[in-house]
Image (cartoon, rainbow over all chains, first blue to last red; front, side, top):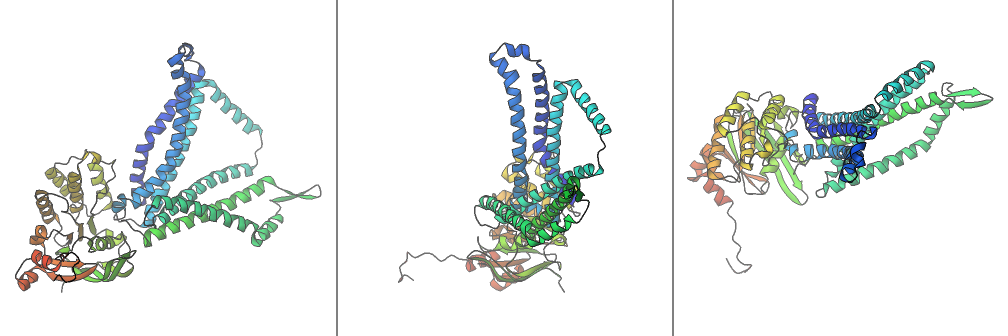
Length: 283
Length: 244
């Protein structure tokens, strides 16, 4: 059921974002040519031609990039609010799918949309570079491979890279679910639901910041950090002092951050699920 | 013995100060066409939404084929809401695919036949359809299922008499005969001929649940006449205490 729900969600998403992604890639190519000076002759004429070939492309590229980022956040909110709590909710909530499947499908679709938008943004940068200096990218890649071959990278660096990737994905899921939980809380209000959703988001964020600050300075956290001191892979004895082992400590903190984001994601998921199960009110 | 398909027990729901449903106890059998009749604001839509799991009751419970509203009941309930629920970007064919994807009891052949009789083409964009055509399309989707319970919320409200006739004919010729149909409306005359049972709701309470034959026999009149008598609005007499 999750897959079927995602299929319709993703189709709706791609219809909206496909043209934007395409525009971003096309504008990257135009900007590449513009930067190579291929339009210099036209630009040297001044007036409209100069504006058209040198000023507009970077502005349009930047504008479409910003619009994609803003639309992404608005779209994620809108798909949840209109798709489940607006008129479309009459269709979605009468399908034989559980509330968990609905929330899961919306979350995974938003995650996929976000990741793809990031990939397209990255690809447009690469495309611009390829058009601007066709040989530079290949040369850069060769340099990178050579440097990696010469450097003995400790396994911990690879581990850290993986951790960073997982942390950003899990953090993104937690953030999306926080938005959903806020909208579900705002939906409890009889009027001005959008306003109360924003207030809920701010409230949850403040509460979590407070809880984190309190948790990190609590005696339990201090005791935990004290135990880390005893672990040689986090701390090393050198020159008469205990020194922090950078990579080990970073890996440890990264792991804890992933765990924390997972817990937060689970918390937001269950708040949303509870509200949509027990307090659903499609008026 | 008649098997009960829907069982409401002490069902209550309020919205702020307004009590929309008050301790509703109601049993609906299988294989019947039942009219849920009452004036505007009597609680018809609230009851139907609770049956669909779109609203939660404050008290009491409802069971459909023995289950609380949930995934299992949604497999056997076909619901026509009192508003359009289509995603604007879809085409007629997309909605048919969606229903076929999610409902095992959806009949594509029947949907194609109904589309042909309605003049609907699968490639039509929903946002280009008129309000009336969208309503007919929604009805086509709902009635193309071989459901055990059809919940139709005001299917003939806001349409002209010719369209009402078309809608009622569509319902009658397409519902699964071993299923039950619950039609909520305040336009009794247009549905009376097809009803087996009538449920009258007033201010959130069931004030009558009787077979249509029994009503006619007992009152020597129609369901519409009885409805008018029971729900006749008191004329305002200008605030004159002596006026009687």
